[in-house]
Length: 70
Image 1: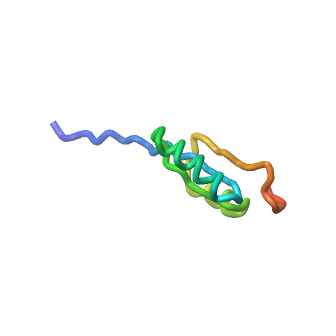
Image 2: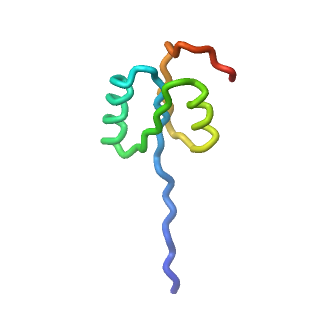
Image 3: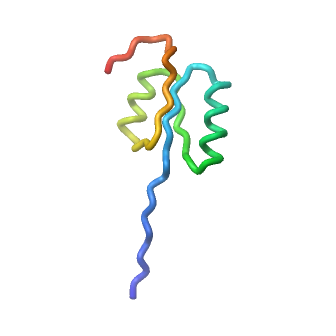
């Protein structure tokens, strides 16, 4: 019987915040709980990440200093 490879998608979290100290706290917490953090420090980077990855969780600061386009 051929080997069947079990496919398991990484559990990813999108972290969007301009303060790296805050991002690192979230990064540590989510990593310890089995998530793969993807970090964006601005809205354009966050939007690009969303086109390239599937996220189970997103943590986005309400105080991003730039307007969004979507």
